[in-house]
Length: 58
Image (cartoon, rainbow, N blue to C red; front, side, top):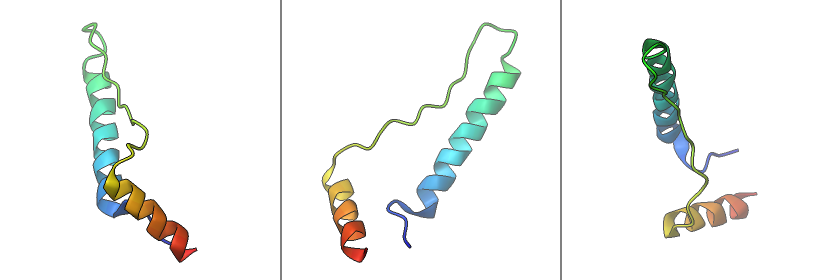
């Protein structure tokens, strides 16, 4: 089993989620909202290569 984008990307996303969550609590009564968005995969050359490698490994 392997991961396409690795641990570093997952850690970065988790950190951004935690930051957005903490900001939402801190800004609760100010009228400011904090949201963490995860855009879908972007079809770049690097993503295509990673997906092909993942398919070939299985």
